[in-house]
Length: 256
Ligand SMILES: C[S@@+](CC[C@H](N)C(=O)[O-])C[C@H]1O[C@@H](n2cnc3c(N)ncnc32)[C@H](O)[C@@H]1O
Image (tube, rainbow, N blue to C red; front, side, top):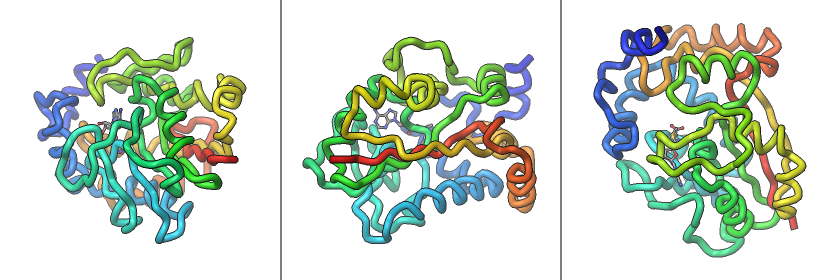
């Protein structure tokens, strides 16, 4: 049933696409630009991320994909696992070819839960970010509502009971556990703190229960026009947004 529904509302540009093909990422640029509701959603995410850094900060984005965070942070260094239009560097988050303490921060949207070995990423982040710098990320979050949505309506695995933080190696987009950020920073927080004494979890802010779903994301048609975005977000903010959030903004500090 869910598969049939997905096929009916699939975005015309995404039909027959292999999500791991770099050309798909290039195509997503067009999709985001052609969907005003989704574009406004990214703009809200990017505004929230940009406020954490000074305009001249030396910040690296990992897994930039078809995003446009650079228009909010002109000094940002964009990167992706493979060459793709508009992205400056090819960088694997698990092995970052930059020198020690060379960054004020790392940002990423929807990337951590795709990394096969997040342990390598955390060690690399602690190495390349200067003391006092931050990792700022927006990732899927686990609530009763989001768990139902991600399990029944989304193509990525969402395994809240996974014991292992590692994800079986697949493609850059097909390999995933959407529940991983919740597992690391909530369920296994004590393990995170023990494993990475140079990283301090500063805050977790769960938000956005419905807007992403209504936007159709990068593979489905938008269910609402762009002018309804602010209305939907203000409705969400008047409910208890965090108890049924689908995403969270997570901030981690590199400490001495
Ligand atoms: C769901 S997409 C998000 C793309 C973009 N940040 C956005 O918000 O639209 C996940 C991204 O993570 C990237 N990715 C997966 N594994 C990676 C790795 N090991 N290092 C860097 N990026 C990776 C993928 O190539 C993909 O672009």
